[in-house]
Length: 274
Length: 314
Image 1 (tube, helix red, strand yellow):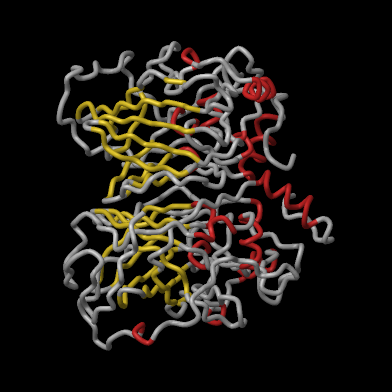
Image 2: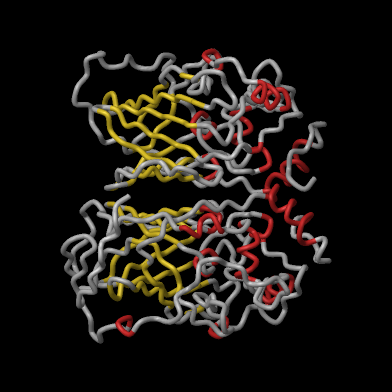
């Protein structure tokens, strides 16, 4: 059974918490207000099978709405001067500085999204594992990433890229992903917190039980933040009947949306080339 | 990093890739990589994604062909099929690159969808074709091209199968993935026995199912939108297009691909192109290559406008 999302404005709708656009996403975050309790601390022998379609729990502050807190503002360290300058220049999608119609996230222009921002929006995503490689597929913008698990180290000096270069390995029950080689064209989150070319991103995954994946995001970006930014773990629910639906951000569709919805309502166009 | 293992060129039908296969054995086992991959050094030389795309596509334009990977010159002798071969491997996995056996010397023909074999168009199809401003062929006018991919709209089958960029097949039980370096696109082909859906919503990539017929992996796709062409000449693709691809792994290093387009709204007969051969590239990994409109605008400013060419972005 396929499930459908509305088109390219699905991410906008999910992200623009405080904007005038109504929440119209058709796939709902899991209903439960509280994510299931994690397994006991002394768990051993959790499965190394992380495969499946996952959806984050909606355990945010707004009922019925995922908080997108896998990268958690509340634990963010102070910014460096460089970081502060980037942060101040950003026009975020969320938070106290957000102004409806003025947002400037690169993703609104159909620029690609990348980790960690790609990991925090409440859209279905899928893990597929084969020997030596783990894939992640994101419904958001139909993005995929490769995590090399064949023992290779991170390259010393990657060219900047949208997704970075990722390697992964197991530490007991935890799959640890490390990524470097980012460009600075994507924020770390939706609040405008920066991602620099120096960012070293760590993700830690544990399959707590058949239906629950725990994800923790750790950002080490000395160019942007004065300390390592450790967010609390975030839980995701297995959705066994879901398939990743096609969802591209296409500029022609953005232009149509501007013409049919935004302009008549007095909003500001975000489509490229406008 | 691991050293690449020496590839043994074993006689048909046994391949070293993933253990033993017989012709009738379905790929039920987890896919094993055939060789460890090295990062391609040419990654650092990659030009802006759009430049490479145009360079490959604009056969008759003033922009020089600037792709950094060289396509294979011609298929090897062992690429020919072995007559009434049975028991070709069902392992299609690997990074592939099409052979450069096109009409124009020095550029790949990109003839996976072959113009020479196109049937006559219907009147409706002809009107759409006439309106298109193509990238290649006799109607092409440099600077006036209108291929949707120039605006970074997603490229889908069969167009994405035609351009000479690396692509990769990964098989798991019930599903085959194709990854394309072009625009970092991936597609799923469901190989779990499900039929094509009855009435899919139009999409850029369509909905694909696949099954084996002896040695041939047959992929069928429907549910396309009409926002892109089937090729670079402006031949239309619509919501009634039914695409068939047929794949055979002729030997360790060679994949045969045949593209068949059936759309009675546009073409008066099915459009059957001759098979196209692809070479295995065991040292390659799909590099990141996104088409980014903001970068497209920079390219307009820095290259196109000074050269007196119309910008691709509207």
